[in-house]
Image (cartoon, rainbow, N blue to C red; front, side):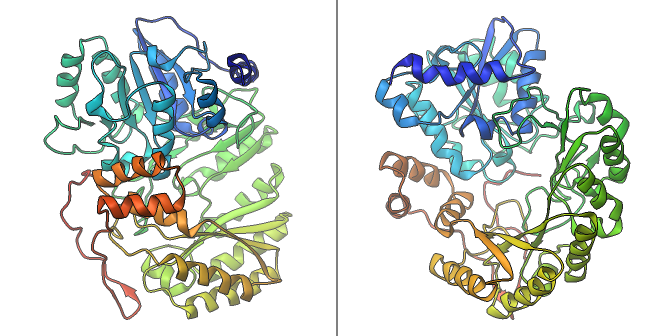
Length: 508
């Protein structure tokens, strides 16, 4: 495939965008997302940092994504290019990666390799661009990134990106020295310890879309964040109430002021949007303006307490109502400190039917510590009751313990057992609910990285170089000696949650 043929989709997507920024500046940053365009442009954080860089007086940003067809780019020997000007990313002063979760490590490798840059930090020199990694992964376990990043930005980066832009005008040695002494930055090989996760000033909220494009999962939807963080204490969640001061809300008036009049579809994004005390007022105003509204993280208890919210979402055009059960039984939900019970899930289904929704979708974690078949049987009974009210589907995801949560170190249910439980549920729920499970194998890989250290990051590179199959990952973890941390004990079917063990922790 020719260079022109590979770059033509970039140019075509660029022409379909609204809000793209162009600027000449002495400092040029390639803002990189290690997944394809349609995923990266659905990231509110990625778009926010793009705008912040352009607001810096001496910096500009162009975007780069993991190509849809990596093999074609490699075969044609076409270097990785940006969208705005189709410039080679290797010519920029800095490559700033936003990494959302563990399995995007291989996307990082692909992009560095396509750019013609050494993957390992220790193999690069000052003549290469500075490689910086940040994003949601840094709230949990950024340690596997250390062999590859010159700089790791921890936490909320709206202010830290300006510190980075200032530093990029300095010679490389001075850049690193400056950043190594600034809170929120970790420099592998230079920093003595991991710093505290950064918290952006409330004046910089809310995060919001800069570019609208039809070529995303959320087609031409304007995203905005009416709240950040969470007020809840769910034991499995990184974004719980102890993270960065808990939930911070933005007044609906400010949110409405920032939504363009041309935005026909609005997505309200956050860890606990329905916990916003004025969420009904905000959604009502948007619906009355004739806009379609989507909300992330719908909570069943809040929907029951605010039934108008369900009818407003239906009025805006939604056909499927999605919320989370998380645990299969009341016992497990209680252990998770999840403020949702079976009665609320049933009530949510009734509200959805009355509002005219066609389906209810519930997210569920499978393989929680202490989970037994009797918990799955309880779920089957609940599903039977719900399915008599409204068609039901389950999104099943194997439980993956994350660092910086009370469930850090909890064991991963073996792949074969997870597959058995999926099959058990599928058989029991036949005719009652649709099952859409994610892969237990790749959940296990995610778990090994989520619980791993630098050796897990090196194993990821080995697996990528060996072709990236599941067998390659298993072999790489084995040969690098990567093993899960000691699991927390499960007693009488209940997870013990002792104080976190000592490790090179990202303090919160």
